[in-house]
Each structure stands twice: as structure tokens, then as C-alpha cells.
Length: 511
Image: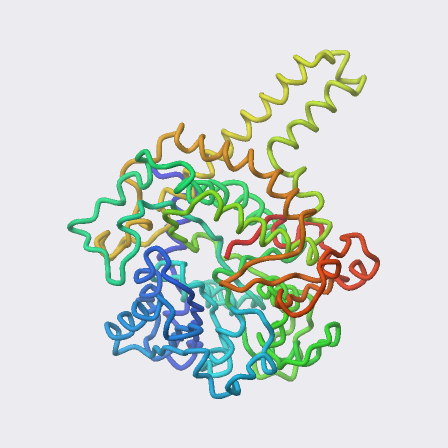
């Protein structure tokens, strides 16, 4: 007998109202896929945007790369060639006519992702834009369900539309040898869907993917879903997000809180490395002009599309790469959401349990009943950790079960990382990755918060200022200028509206 939650998930997956609208009322969607390097299962991830159960003439896909020398270029060209009937195009940053040769820095800031997507955004067809990272795979009905959520379509009639909708990101660690290719995986010879990543491998060379999987499928997911359900503050991961160009263009034209020499839309954030959070934050706070062609009496801010997941396959990720990515985004977040960054260690299992155990063994009201010895304190800490393990294991099993992935087209069409697992990852293998992730949390936070402001992103070395802008590292700026104090009055005034207690999920975003 299926549970109520499973039945609800199935209904959410198979039901898409936008496909039942009159054809001329279906919104045109432009999917922008910024690409960089050879990602695991890149072909499957990119092809997923062209296999959506959405009217073909209402869907445009732009694949964006910085140069034709990028390793992803051959895979993109193969995807386009095999979907010649679809409206898809490769856009190369170096060939953007709007950027003058040799002086592109005068047109756009150092954010490499914004530079990558700028032309696609300017040339987008229709008003609805879906930014989908190249290493993300979504189900066939994801586009329709996102449009339904964004526009307020439902079987019960028109509901209040959202300004911005997005997906929960979940990582899946996969064996390395099957993950890197530039053509579809042959289902007849592929066995990676059987308990992926359970074989013994070199810990330092490959365990980073397991840590990422454990984080996104438990600690991050709990916080992300909770904050978006309560909806008290923006909580956004930019891996899969949809909004209207008219809204963002209007708000960036009116925005005077940031001095920028760049244009409207996403170009407005070309000097910021956390563009996804800032875009969502501006749409959350901004009042949509009633003069726009698409307007509503009252807009809802952000909406998480429940049921759908933004699946990210990871493979052969060393622990050092995992740590470097966590450090990178923490160093960005400590200026965008400083309060959330400072309190973040207290939301993690080890420190939170320690604080609770200390409190119970110190306060007279509880100490008199349970005792105040170190042994009691250690026992309470261990009991609390056991509770965390049980909850996180249950969340992990739910998210990794594949129960909300469409299988009506047959499993042979699904990539290995998206298929329902025939055999779950053994508990003790998961527990090792969970313990590793929890153990590294505080050292990573300490180094990221107090160890500097330098980050490396998309092969560019940058440093982050109090104004949340990024700067090229090698441009004559002294190290002293790169070490501003987090508590500086200038910084506190500059981040004004970005100091939500748990904005952006209170967690680091993933690249």
C-alpha cells in the first residue's frame, strides 16, 4: 500500500496544467545552460532540456560556453546535431558581437557565469527564462510544472503567480569510468544504476563526491525545504531557477542600491559572484510595476517546485575539491548574509548537540534530574547525534529513492543516476560519508570565514570585497585590501537587505 506522500508525489509528477492550456496561451520558455568543462554525464544533462514534455515551438535552448576550446563544446555540438528539429543554439562568449574584441571587461564584470550567459539572456525568446546549470538533469515534465508554479496555473483555476521558482538540488555520486563521455549511455551495457558508488575506492581521490551527496541529500535539503516552505526569507540555489525577464529588467533599471556601470537584467550583477542569490533577493523585495504587460494584483515571492529535483551527478571528486568548493561559497556568503554565516556552525549536528548537552547538564532545572557529570554530557551528545543520524538517513533514502522521477517512458531512457535504485547504498557506507561531512564542517567554516577572501571560480582567481563585488586578483590590489573585517561598519551598511538570518538556506550553495 503506497503511502500518502508517495501518492502525492506521483500526482505532482504526472500532472502538468500548462500542457492542457490552449496552445497560444502556453508561455514561451528560454532555457539558458551555462557550460564549463567536461562534467559527469554532461550529454544526458544537456539533452534533458531538449526532451521536455512541453510544446516544441514554445521552447528555446541556448548552450553557452566561453570559448570553442572548452572541453564541453564537442558534447554540446553532438546534442544539437541529434536534436536538429528543436530550437537550440550554441552561443560562444568570445563571438558575442556586443563585446568589443579585447575590451570585454569594459562591457561586463569579472563574473564568468554572467559573461557566459549574457548574450543568451539578451536574445531570449519570450519572457520566461529558465537558468539551468550544465551539470543538472531534470525530468521530462519539469518545465511544465515550473511554468505552472510560476504562472499560478492549476486544475482549481488561476492562483496567485510567483515571481521566481526553483528546484531542490540533490547530488548523486557515480563511478568514474562510466560518467565521462560525449554520447548517450547504452542501457544494455550500463550497470551503474545498481547501488552506484558502493565499491571500495581511494578515499582521498574520490570520496569528495560522497561527501557532496551526503550534504545535499540531508543537511542542506532539510534547511532548504524548511525555509522555502515557511517563506520568511529568500533561500535560493541557482542550479535550476525560472523567472520573467520583464520583472528582472524593470527592477534592475530601478535599483539604485548598487552603483554599477553595466546594463539591466543579469548583466546588472556582473560584478557579483553570488548572482543567483542577488537576483532572487531583488525579485523577493522588489515591487513589480503594474505597467508591465504581464502583471498581477499581488505577486507571491518565491516558490519551490515540490516533487521535482535538480539532480547533479558527481564523479571522481577528491576531498580537496569538495572542501575548496565549500570554502569558496562560504567566503562569498560571509558578506552577502553575514549573520547566517556566523551562526551556521550552531546549526550543524556536532556543535548543536554539544550546546544542547552542555545546557541540560548545566541548568539547575535539568541537572538535578539527569546529573551534571562529563559522562552524562557525553551520553546526551551521543544520543542527540543518533537522532541526527536517523533523521538524515530517512531524508537521504527519500531523496535518493527516485520515486518522483518520471518512468512512464521506460527506464531505458533515464540516465543511471536518475533511475530508482535497485539496491540502496548500504547504511554503513552512507554513515562514513555522513561522519566525514559533519567532521569537516567546522574546519571548513573556520578557514573560509577567517582565512581570507580569495576564491577560484571557473579557472579565475578572484577576491571578494565587503560590497559583495568580485575583483580580479592580479590587478594591483594589496593583500591588506583583500582582508576586510567582517564586522566593519561599511560592510554592515552595504549589505543592508541581505542580512536575513537564514537567507540562502543558511547553507553554502553549490556551483
